Image (cartoon, rainbow, N blue to C red; front, side, top):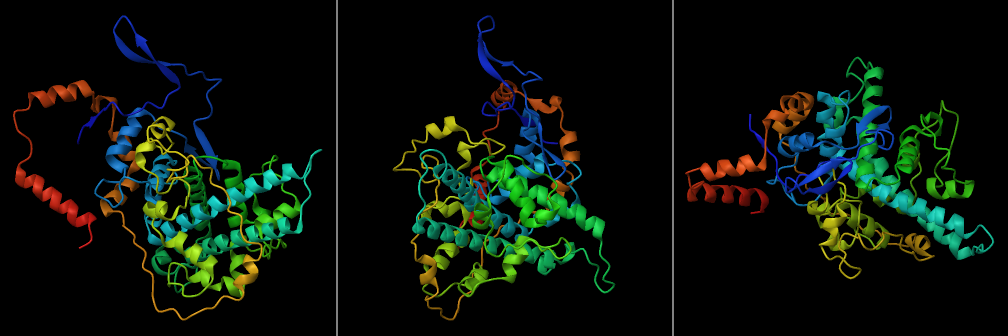
Length: 455
């Protein structure tokens, strides 16, 4: 088995500080870990304990065995696949099954997770707007709300419905069991027998995995609001397994966040909010269901905006000045577990003028036109002639098989297999060869060029 080499850029995920040892004339790490002060090492999501971080050995194993290869497209930026790899590595062992690993590495699930991240990007902005507006209209210096303010709130609510509609479309593709989802459907063909227990366990694991993906994509912020909304979207209000006492929305705020289509009924007849959105699609929002499938031809600017955000690859979001969490951000300003390194950000010289990833500027809601939704009803629609084919790079079968054996791969590595950087340099100095030949270097370059460039 290939040996792992410790390099100087690999951080130690410990609580402590670096100090200078004057006796030995070197920098040493002092561990200040206190059992009473350190937080839990796990975060419980839907009954599953996901690790919050990794130690140095686990980080080295992830970098060598499970990290996305440099030969893949856009290897220098963060994509949905990078977030999936981190969540899978931090996931508990009971989630790692063969069916679940193959299920996650499908194009349908990839589209669903991307739509989920886009939805929560807008949803968390709406929650922040609601909380700020709540403080502005309360207290001694309360502001009076005008009719234009209420109209803008209705526009914001409609925009959130549109993002939820895209998410509902992707979710319905999964639960219908069509296409590549047919092998994971819970009903056996011909005999029509449902594997209810297996499907329930599979569904819970997928919701937990999706919650972790969104949380990491949102810079690990607002976990309570993300978890609460995930429960509501996929379970409805009747089946909340976890409640947060500090999150209480008024009836007006609930109407704004959840939309006009959300109806709470008896639990026997209750549908999830996503299915309710698909059952009550307004005429002007019908073209949204074709985004990513057909090229929209019409005069509705809102549809054009949604289509642009959805079909532009994550690595090129900076070209349209759109931010979807950490998607499209350069990996060099993040550590292995995709936590932002503010020291690295400081040396990138970002400013309010040059801020392609919206790290200096605070992502905020753009103030819409008051009559925006009224004008959409008069938009012209034309026949569609073009189909959109989204680019998707599938993970190799060898890597999928390795994910299925994740625990066995990690157990194969021990501390004795790690070679320090000093030993590595000594071995390099003892080598007598001049390295690879010119022909070998040329062949590697041509292979990489053929993979990454379009002919």
